[in-house]
Structures are given as structure tokens and as C-alpha cells.
Amino acid sequence: MKRTILLNLALLLAIVPGMAQSLEKMQWFNEPEQWEIKDNTLSMFVTPKTDYWRISHYGFTVDDAPFYYATYGGEFEVKVKVSGDYKARFDQAGIMLRIDHENYIKAGIEFVDGKFNLSTVVTHHTSDWSVIKLDKAVPYIWIKAVRRLDAVEIFYSFDDQEYTLMRNAWLQDNTPVQVGLMGASPDGEGFRATFEQFKVKHLPDLRRLEWLKKNSAQ
Image 1 (cartoon, rainbow, N blue to C red):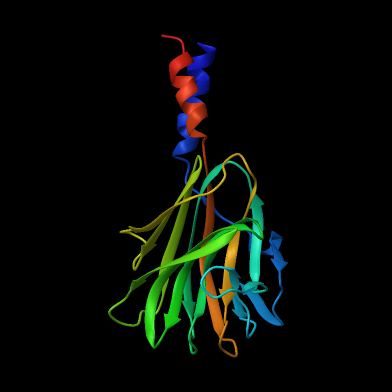
Image 2: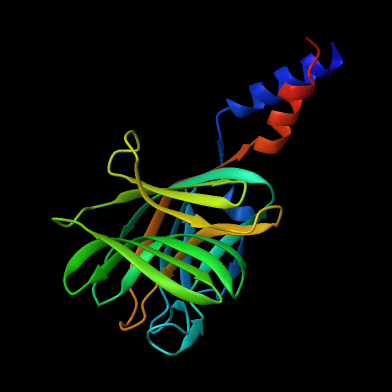
């Protein structure tokens, strides 16, 4: 009976809707000079000549762009609505999941050669970069990341209803992760980025749920 109750509680937690993360309780890494929180919306002017990248292709390492985050353990889902006044090549805004300076994933919109791209950078000592080109400019985008076990799935949406997978990447499990909002302007003089409806939802551990199923009373 006790094991059955535990299983039911775990399954119930899996469907509890996520609450909006309190932006006021988060903290900065590389705080920009201009930023504001109003109505649970973060607006910042992205610091010029900043980025996150390690070694590969370009031969340099940078770790100096604004990142506003809170730390989470276990498995979770995070999403946010992103918009920006993108101007220069590589201007970008979105979410980042970061263990340390050698292990992180960032995903969002990136402005390249006058085009809007859905962009993901995965870094494990060295960085890689994948893009999905959009046919036209978009006023905003929703980006969602789901961390399950040792993998992170990255999705995008234009309406917060239908989400499309844009990347599946490895990230060390059973390790706390800094989760939050980032912007970068590697080539430019900065731009205004806005982050709305930021939410993080805890997901019960898949291994734990499987154990409960196998060990619940029949």
C-alpha cells in the first residue's frame, strides 16, 4: 500500500503545471549595465562584444555575455518567450543551461547575415553550432528545453502551442545546472532583448518512476 501511494504521488507531480520562476530571486553572471524586471518580464541591453564560445573553428574562447539564472537539480522543463531588436551579425538571445565554463547549452534566435536563425550551441570543452534558417523575420519565439537523464531536448514554437524539436544534446545528469536567460552581441554594439513568461517545471526523475513501478505493491 505504501509503495502504491508513493507511486501515485510521483505520477501526480509529473502533471502538476509549472509556475513562473520569480525573476527577482535569480542572479547575474556578467551583469549588463542596463536591465529591468517588470511584470515578471526581463528586459536588458545586451553588452557589446560579448559571447559564449570555446575553441573550435574560430580558435578563441569567450565567456563574458550576460546570463541571468537560477540553479536547478534533477530533471526539468524550462521555456521562455524571446524577442529582440537584433541589429548586427551574431546578435542572439535565448536560454542557457550551464554546468560550468566548459559545459553548457545555449539556444534561441540568432541574427546572421540579415537572416533570422534558430540557433543552438552545445559546448563540452569545445563548442559546436547548429542553425535552422527562418524564411522571414519573426517578432518573437518560444524556446523550450527538457532535461531528462543525460539528455536535453531543445524545442521552438511560434505560438506556445505547437513545439518542434531543434536539437537533442548530451548533458551530464545528476549534476546541478544553472538555468536562465542569455543574450550576446559578439560583433555588434549591443541590442535590447526581452524575455517573457519564463517558467521552470520540475519533472520527476525517470529512473525513480521506473523503480516505483517495478517495486509497487500489486
